[in-house]
Length: 256
Image (cartoon, rainbow, N blue to C red; front, side, top):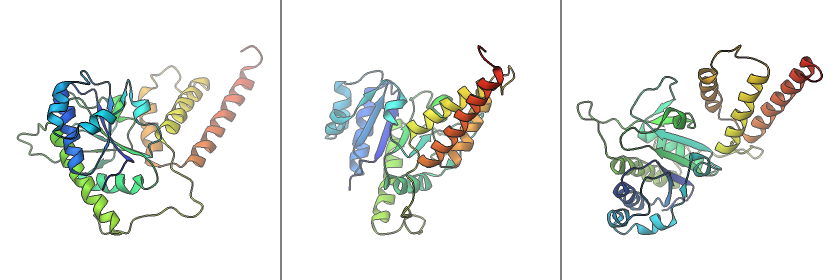
């Protein structure tokens, strides 16, 4: 069972063989939406060789210069990470991450991000995510090849898809459905425009008082991502920000 709404996004992949192996791992579990962000070498014969029959996924995979296009329209974004960060993300198990991704995919595109072989996802990239997922490897040898990580999580997604098709998620809870008057969840690009507007407004009202805004914005991202806002809620908040900007301009006076 293929699910085009579940995007597997490889960010900054350094070895083309890992791209091919990841495509093979996806295809064995019924996934087909591979997205590549700034790969170092692609297309490449090594990727095709290691795809072992999944070269159709490679041929269809869009190659993007940054995350914006890869996440366009996504309702839920989960990033893989083995490291704890300064601003922590909600951390999901592979099974719970798969459950949430499959449930959200019923409403629109979702994304599961994998980072670079040596360094993983950067903090700025993880800040684009609603949550992180960590594969519980053995602490004595935790190094996991990117294609192996894709295989583990693709397997969990496969289980979640099969159980959702039977009316239940892996936890045994019924598949949630939107209410008749429910607004669609805000997409990743809508949220990025909101965060840009929020940062601009905080600058205009001199909220930071000369202090570095990065940490405040990172924590505000976590707060609003946890809220799982819908499109209408984002519009309301942006309306509030626009009014705050208008009042700030009035307070500064003409020519300020």
